[in-house]
Image 1 (cartoon, rainbow, N blue to C red):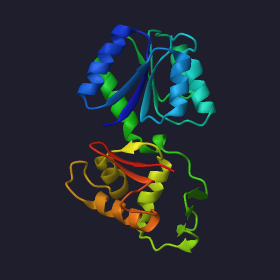
Image 2 (cartoon, helix red, strand yellow):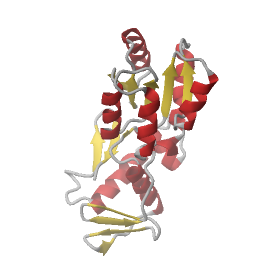
Image 3 (cartoon, rainbow, N blue to C red):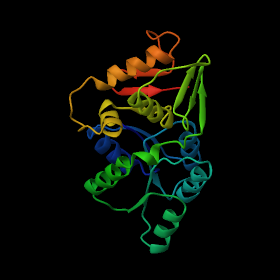
Image 4 (cartoon, rainbow, N blue to C red):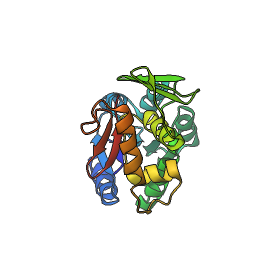
Length: 227
């Protein structure tokens, strides 16, 4: 399941989109206030944000601009009843990834949303040269990992998986997404590759591999890396 945020104050449209997106397998959080939606988007990671323009307390343009100003690169699909070209251009200039004018066909929203979600780098956090968590230090330039100051032997694929997790820290990532983005496998491939490599990272980088603190399994959903 992919976690989405819908910031929309029309109850009827919120209900329609909730039914549509949950039926398609998405996990959806909804909020009807612009300022509260902005705070939630800053506090919690989402795979994508569906953002209305006309919102109470903080309009969608301001929400989009402030999210981008804070360095939050979550894909944003803006919704609005406005049809003027200037509004569309403004939304895109402020950092929105796509723009949909009401009324719209549900299938078009799904297609645009899926296109945004396929752009995996858009959900990734920019990597520093060196990243620390717990007793681990990762040097991405030197492709080195140290645990309690000791150099860890790590395979190229394990390092790429580690990089991928760090870029998406805090996000729950389905197994199929890992197989596609890290290994290049078809999303429907049946393999325990992810489990094996994740187990290796736990053995090498967790204080207690049987009770991991950083590389977590989210039962029924996927995996999550937390600092």
